[in-house]
Length: 224
Image (cartoon, rainbow, N blue to C red; front, side):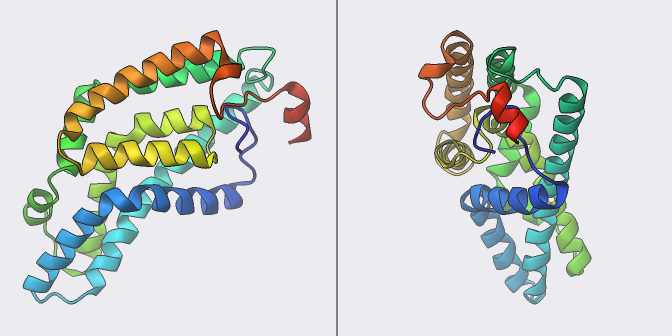
């Protein structure tokens, strides 16, 4: 899975386990403020503590659904054109196109709306409060949908660069943290957009010089 675009993602069960673990690790730093706000409001309302767990579960369900859709798209593309990702064919252009698309997505109104939501956890928790465990899970699911909308471009970039590359995982997780939590995060999204477009052009022109990017060869794909 660290072999860049087109690398085999394995069976569905294994993929889901890895995907949930990976997204939990990547998103945890940026979602902690929202979970903390939820827990504080839950305490003030004397609603117990089961809601916090349900909120996190709902959040992870949203990302699991996104991961399943991505897996389905990967399988369809692989079946339609098995050689499309090879180094000798269009592999680097697939990766480059994904990176440019990720950069352009950072400029869309949808991205900005979702990012503003993620940067205002108190407003969301107070405005969307629902009682009970099922209500907490629904809130987590709603917040997760906004988070998916905010980070979809970044996750597409991660698929292009190498889904299980620790280097690129850490880089994308850092971008997510800066955008969602730190001051001027919305402005930093513009920097991220430019960076991904430039990186996409770099990958198209000279993929071998990009650190940590490995476009799989046909022999490697057959071994997978």
